[in-house]
Amino acid sequence: MSDYLDDSLDEDEKSKSQVKREMLALQQLGLRLADLKPDLLNKMPLSDELRRALEETCRHTAHIARKRHSQFLGKLLRNHDIDAIMQPMNLADSQTREYNNRFHALERWRNRLIEEGDTALQSFVQDYPDTDIQHLRSLIRHAQHELARNKAPTASRR
Image (tube, rainbow, N blue to C red; front, side, top):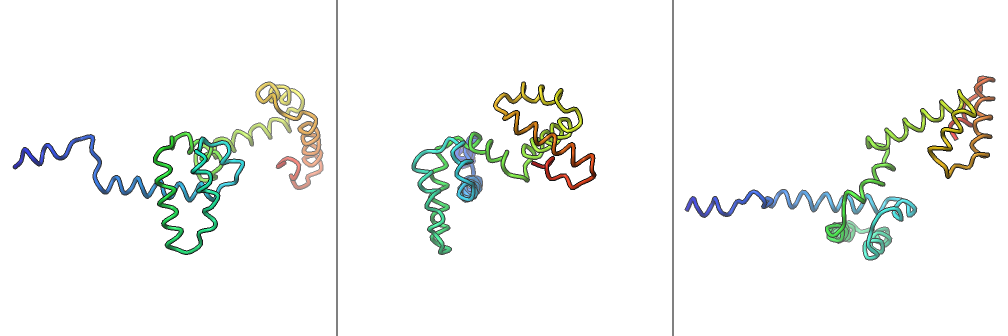
């Protein structure tokens, strides 16, 4: 009898509880995806069926209908690469480390652009060639004027 028990618990098999936790995580991910803006969803590798299901999530308002729909979203997400979906999502979610790192890097660039001016602007354009230089240059000038006059930093935040 002990041989039977040893054979039934392979190391590769997941427990019923682990499978349930993974399914609940996929359902929660589906609901988080439904709350995202469409331009962020377009950056993710999602199937057409999943995109349609995400669009119709707002139509389900009753508790049991929303629960059933979240289960459907979880089922659809089983066939997707979750890491590829989470990467752009983490950059947009303010509670993740990736978002905070990106935000701090943007703050460093902002401070450098305001302090150094055109020299920092040239290195910024080399790193980010799609930048609208004229618009960025005018924002830098406005921010420098605000800093010189001790005004609120509205232009530097832009």
